Image (cartoon, rainbow, N blue to C red; front, side, top):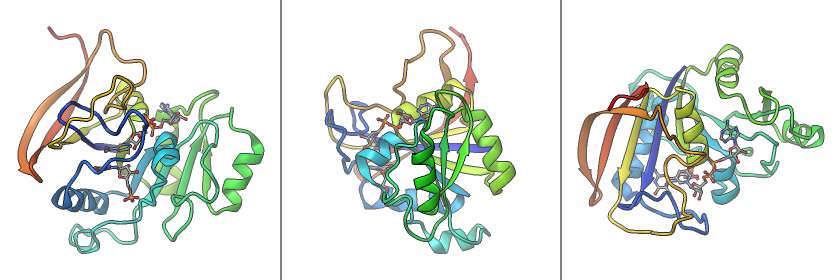
Length: 224
Ligand SMILES: NC(=O)C1=CN([C@@H]2O[C@H](COP(=O)(O)OP(=O)(O)OC[C@H]3O[C@@H](n4cnc5c(N)ncnc54)[C@H](O)[C@@H]3O)[C@@H](O)[C@H]2O)C=CC1
Ligand SMILES: Nc1nc(O)c(N)c(N[C@@H]2O[C@H](COP(=O)(O)O)[C@@H](O)[C@H]2O)n1
């Protein structure tokens, strides 16, 4: 499974406000770039924290670019949601694109059932939390999803980095300061104290008054 993470953050490294309200950090050119990334992916992935905060539909993508890269159909939507908290009427469940909800054994059966009735495919992996390596393997084997673009949020991205599952990371750094010690950042979770995820900078580009940084994730290690 190829995993690309793309996030937009403020100049001080925040994904949204301390109230976890969605924030327009990208401008038109960066959203167009995101639409091209979505077009190249088999699926767009978010955590349920993002679903509950933003209620995204994840259906927009650059159709012309998708044809250009030789992909057919539409990108699927995937939600990492250990306890099946995704509301069955969430935008990410409705609409024409397929939706996969990755849950754990801890997800109540009635909530899983409600999601299936709403049209989602539920994949269960892990006991208390979604076991991401297993869930992604199942997605690849059962849904033919082998190339995903993860849009956040910080809890999910940290877990993916901790499990060494991320191949590439793209960050748009926008021209604003959000502040707040509790505002989400691109990698929240518990944080590393050693074996940090190591990156290699492949490119940088001015866009929308900010900058896009393209990183390859080299993996976790304790180089000085
Ligand atoms: N600026 C940007 O590019 C983006 C900003 N955001 C912002 O991020 C915030 C939401 O981010 P978070 O609260 O961090 O939530 P999140 O979107 O990372 O979801 C976290 C949830 O995912 C579920 N999950 C299942 N398995 C997991 C695992 N193995 N590891 C981690 N999580 C797992 C858990 O239920 C957990 O509570 C919102 O404020 C949203 O607006 C979200 C996406 C992009
Ligand atoms: N790339 C980017 N720039 C921003 O400024 C953002 N706030 C986000 N947020 C992400 O985009 C999702 C919205 O998806 P839809 O447009 O509803 O399909 C949102 O949920 C975040 O994942 N991204």
